[in-house]
Image 1 (cartoon, rainbow, N blue to C red):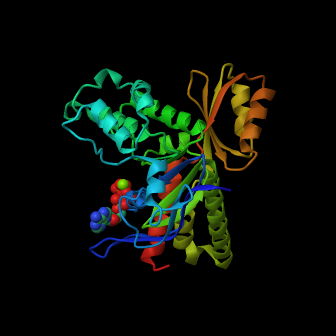
Image 2 (tube, rainbow, N blue to C red):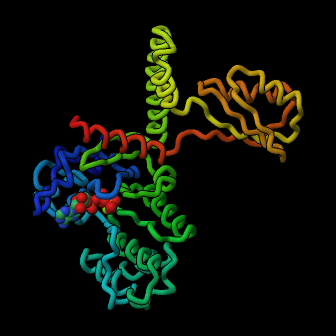
Image 3 (cartoon, rainbow, N blue to C red):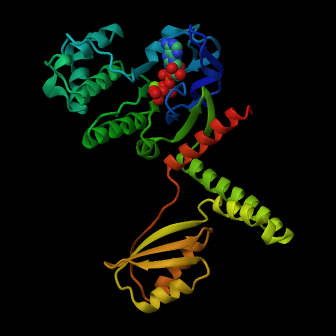
Length: 357
Ligand SMILES: Nc1ncnc2c1ncn2[C@@H]1O[C@H](COP(=O)(O)OP(=O)(O)OP(=O)(O)O)[C@@H](O)[C@H]1O
Ligand SMILES: [Mg+2]
């Protein structure tokens, strides 16, 4: 397996003594879209700055496209593009002049330069403003210019640090499509973001960073599955404790038992089913299922069903509706979102830090 990004024990201590990146082991496979998530101050931008040779590392090892950021910075710079968290364009130059400056910095061949710039400006829909000064642009237009400038030398690896902050929903989609398109062309994309929907939608793999360390790494679905698994394990432990306390005598342990019961997390899941021909028999049959806690009929063919979480619960619901001659138009479950994963993992890590683990 080839990595576009590979760090071992990477450390950054700033001049004031603050350790922003703490023995970080980060891997992003070549030709994938790798997401980097983490709370404010987790060390994401610091890591990206080291990987893009903007600031020196304190210790450890960091390789980008197989080249060492300290020993072969020019090789690294030639293969990367960067859309920084804070747009860094020249305000007194026009959009086109900014992009040309970047092209010249990277020695883009003069014979293809103009066409390349035209194509990129068209691609992100900013060509109409190419002669405007950057200081005259809206935030979204500046961001688009920044993206064009980062791509003009055809980099293999593109770093984007919160690129869609403040963009309108349509422009966001333009950038998402662009990232996917660039990835389809074989480029690696490193995306730092707080937008969970964005990360879930386009990333192949995610590293969650907290306090300068990787605290989770998996595919978006893998992270969600892990959360469900952890919740289930946690609940099993709690149920065992409840059982033990109940055997010892409910009266003396009532308060603890109630406390434990309230800490059982999300044992149920909500499923929304649209059925075009709901009738009372169907609702009663669903209500009779062991896996069903509650059925609500909201009119307009919408059933909201609270289920006991299990691998087969949804199957039972579908089979019952079909057996009753129901026509299912759509079915939606409220599985955990990436935001749930993020909150659970970072909260757990903070707790561990607090208790000195
Ligand atoms: N030049 C600096 N000198 C000292 N400390 C710094 C410097 N730059 C950043 N830090 C600190 O390093 C930590 C990590 O900052 P960084 O910008 O990498 O976080 P981040 O994960 O990108 O956060 P955000 O999501 O807010 O962008 C923070 O505590 C920050 O205050
Ligand atoms: Mg940042």
